[in-house]
Every structure is written in structure tokens, then in C-alpha cells.
Length: 410
Image (cartoon, rainbow, N blue to C red; front, side, top):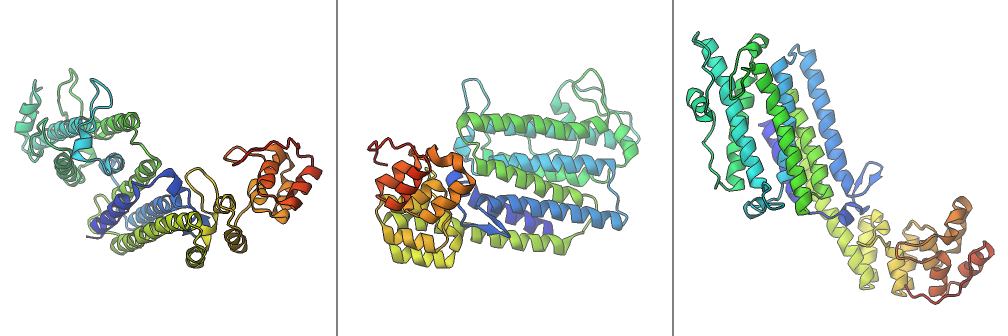
């Protein structure tokens, strides 16, 4: 159950994380070691899963359980299977029927085709193996997939065009588990057995095994293009695709080993389980401090910064930092609070906040920024004039800032 617990933890992370926006990913409210930003909750979970996979492979080799050719192919297939599931995260049955364009497949149709084809591949492989085991002639070249299904065992439930995406995913999961379980003990010599399908050439089992991965790769790419066309391919889904690939790498590392890596997988699951709560807290705190600054609630901002000092460098959906937003509100008590909390100030933030010290430090190392525009389109001099910061105004003029004296209100 250790692997199942790890899978459950990753799926729980995905359910909580896929709705996040790029703005939320940019927030510094989450910290992993020396790294700040919510997206590092994704990136370092992926890193930890890859470390776990490498450790399990090392354990496997040290124990003399060397992976076979079939194990390698099934491991690659497992990674692609997980990637595809990651892209499906949060897509409802109704969403699954929405075509990206006229005459193009919706998500449900893509997954249905994947399921149909893998069932077909698996049946062809099973028929070839059954003929070898039973010492019967190889099956004749079938002219219809149904004849292959009829000859094979455990090929899954026949599909229909109307099946909802959620049910289809369950059937595919069952079929996929059967493929991994029943083919994991496949010996190298049996990879050369003939496994005929529709082609004019009767390809061997080895080719069918490779096609499980390459066919899935082909249609995972199609799924990604479909999500792009529908506007659903967000950065969280791409980050989850990487994470699920790493999960598949963990699963692939122990295919054919029986029970291995129990404590390692359970430890990883516990870390990811706790990280979900940390991620959710970080996102809530980011939204809360933006609200506190907007509403000029100094006490709430102080409490949030005490709980999580990294919040001081949060920004809004337009990329404006808290200290600039506070300056726009003429809330100088909030500006001072953020300065005392260690807010990062580039030249524009320093001009808006009236911090001569930060303006001097910035220009010393980046003199070319004197005439650059802020995220909302203003020069440092325009910002310092807007907020009447005389010391900063004089300093910027001394450094050569162009004195257009043009009235612009941010």
C-alpha cells in the first residue's frame, strides 16, 4: 500500500494546485529551503520524487533485481500514462466533450482512442503469449479488432462512444494496471514472438510494447494541443505534468520487484501530504495581505508578516509590489511597516516609497535604470514627483533624470 499512498498524496496535491493562477504561483509566501515562490511547491515535489526514483533504482541494483527489457518499456509507458493523467486534472465530463475546433477531437475522444488502442495492443500481445504457452500456432492476421479481443484475456470492458470521461479514466486505469501486472514478468526471448494486428507486417511483441509508449506520447501531445486551443493549458498543469512524470519514474523503478521501498514511499507521501496544507496556507496568506494593504488594515498586515515574513514581497496580479500599492493609497504607515519588514525595493519602488537609501543603492549598481518604466508605465522621477518625495527627486535629477515635469498620475 505504500505506493498507493504516495499516488494518493500526489493526486491530492494536484486537486489543490491545478486551479492556481500564474499570479499565485509568483507569490513568495511559500518557502522550500532557500527558494521562495509558490511554484517551488511543485518544482521541489518533482525533484524529491526524482530523488526517490533514483534511490529506489539504486536499492534495486544493489539487491540484484536488475530490470529487464520489458521492465524498461513498461516504466517508460508508466511515465507517459501519468503525464496524460496530469493534463486531465480538473477536466469535468462536460468539459471533456467540448471540441477545440470544428471536426477536431474533444478530450473525451482522445482518451477513448488511447483506451481503444491500448486494449488492442494488449490483446495482440496476450494472444502471442497464449499461443506460445499453449504451444498452438500463432493467431492468423485478424481483419477486425474484435477478433483479437475475443481471443485474448483480460482486455478490459468494451468501450462506447458515449462513455463519460470520468468512467473512461477508470476503465483505462484498470486496463493499464493489467498491462503492467501481466507483462512485467515478460522474458526477453518472448519479446520476439509474432503479435499480428492490422498491418501487412506481423510485428513482434517487442514492437507492440514500444508502441504502448510511443502511441500514448503521440496522443498526449494531441491532448496538450487541445488544451492550448481551449485555453486550459495553464502553468500549474504543466508543472503537474512534470510532477506526474516523476511519479511514474518512481513507479517504474520498482516494476517487477514485488514489495520494495515501502518506508521510502510512505515518507515521501507524508511530506507531500503536509505540503498540500502548506501550499493552501501560503496562497491564503498571499491573498490576505493584498487585501490588508488594499483596505489599509495595518494590524492585519502586521499579523500576517509576523506569521510569514516572506509576504512582504508579495505582488498583485499586475505585478505591482505591496509597497507601491501602499504608496498609491498614500498609506505611509503601511509603507513604513513594509520597509521595516525588509521589503525588496528596486528603483521604482524606492521612488514610490521615498527611500533615498534604496534609490542610491540601486543606481550605484544599475545606472541604466534611471529612465526605465515601471510595470505601470512611469519613470522613477515621475513616481517620486507623484508622491512628493523631495530628497529622491533631487537625487534623481542630480543623476541626470530627464525633468519633463509632465503631470502623470499613476
